[in-house]
Length: 189
Length: 279
Image (tube, rainbow over the protein chains, first blue to last red):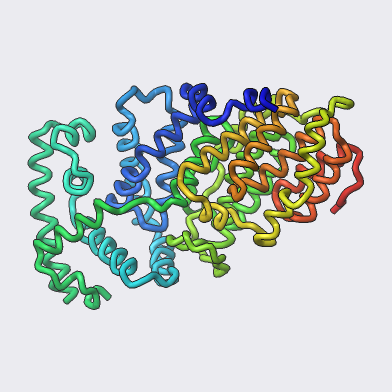
């Protein structure tokens, strides 16, 4: 039996051997960046019901193009892909009324959640409504700075804009955010 | 609707910080992450993969696509097909069960949603050359090792597919996913099945069997037990133990008659000259 376990290798030997394998790289990509991509898509206006599929798509694209992604630039690639997919989805969303209907139907039909979870989701949904009022370019910078808490140079490199532009977009985004938040809050209460 | 929310009673500055904190802690559901792990593994292997673009696909078109994939899988190799089917199952279950965002609950929800974001195959034709090359494993006669017979007799017993069936007549992928202990466990599970599949493709039946044994030992409540059981039928058949392979096939078809893998298992059993379970 001993030689059989040698044949099998077991997890440590297996993973050591598999370091180079593309599927292992792809899984590492998911493990390291899935939450980042998920939040990004969500906050960039992808409806809750679609975030899962959109995130899957981002990682499948990344996996197929793994050889094109330079080491250490994974996040940049994922960011760019997520941005494109979010933009496409938002465009489709505006075009398709029936889809908007289905989204609201989904919210109504979702399973009962404990109070805290319900509150959390309502709050996040409120946040997304506020974010919707922002200009797309400003919104991206706002999300990366304020939610992902990246530094200005990091955001500049990710988005591909000068640091000065990051600062000015962030400033305008903050103003718009606070204004919209205050407006909706007054409307809500 | 917004008026009833307590969080709105905070001052704007507090509310802003509260919302941003909440967003920073927002995490993807474990189910979505596991699905991504499966998807990228399949994509990396070049298997036809569902990319999530077709947001408007209907359950009907999805069912057709699934049926097509099953057919494709019957023609193509077993291993790549296994991954495809696993992905297919996830998708099919999503349509059938329409799990809510809180998919951690293991209770099945039967109310179908009209517009669940269905996922349709984009690169259906892209089943890899690997899978084409894998082909049907041929049965090797007279090479059944004694050790294998012993372990497979055990397999036919309580720890076999019947064990899975005992936990629910139709194990849904969603519930099976939800029962996984940690996000990475599925990756590890998959690596054992991939190993077994690779061994089968090279007609190394014994190695495949030991990978499956190892899988069973390490993941007694694994998410991929049905897939492992199907692979086991192939592996035992390939090892030359026809009687046991037929027995296992029969057990599989009894327990999972509606599994997408059932057709494959049935074909394997037929190839063995079996007369188990004709539909």
